[in-house]
Amino acid sequence: MARISSSTLFNFTDSIDYLVNNLKDGFYCHNTYEKLPLRNNGYRVPMACFCDIPLSLIKEHFDWYGRYGIGIKRAYARKQGVKPVWYVTSESNLVRNLVKQENLSEYERKHLLPYLKQFLGNQAYQSGKEKRKKFYDEREWRYIPDSSLVEVFFGLKAQREKRTALQNGERMKLDLNQVEYIIIEKESDFDKMINEIRKITNGNKELKFENLIAKIMTTKQIERDF
Image (cartoon, rainbow, N blue to C red):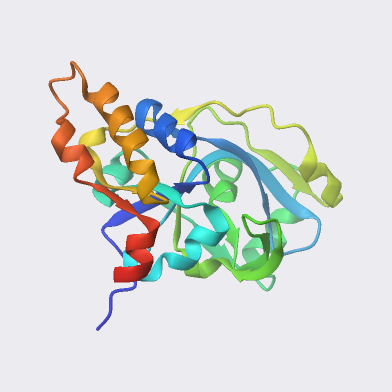
């Protein structure tokens, strides 16, 4: 039976520079507006997102989130506080009851709402073209910093989601010994990636340059061989 899950969690970005920064400093937490399945309801919170998808099924993910990524051991991610999201539909009594409340409890605001994700919705490709997407297929996991403020937008108009993000900048700690894959777009990225890894490992006795460069592969290789 084909596996539909992985022991590795992947985080993707659209730039080799962002990839290098994530390797150096940890995963960047974007202050993200998340729509709920009921119209004009959502929330915003800083998060680093991962997918639990084996390489054989991950090709479509490149078009949505970028062709540069890092795969880390899922067991390590769990210890850092990364958790799977809870997919919900417009029929969900949980969501319907939440959006009726004027004041959420601390538990609902901090530990429940930030892990709710709509099952189906619209999203733009990297190209900017919007398409209907079944988010359930991503098997998303999230890291949300403990100090994050969850902004709640219940019953507000969609333009509120375009407000200036004020909480960007926090990062999730990354132990490079827990990295399973470093994904780059093309072979011409190899030289830059190798030079950056050399800088990262130089003088660090806990990291081995050879081990990290052995984890590099290109999206072209994945599309061709998996």
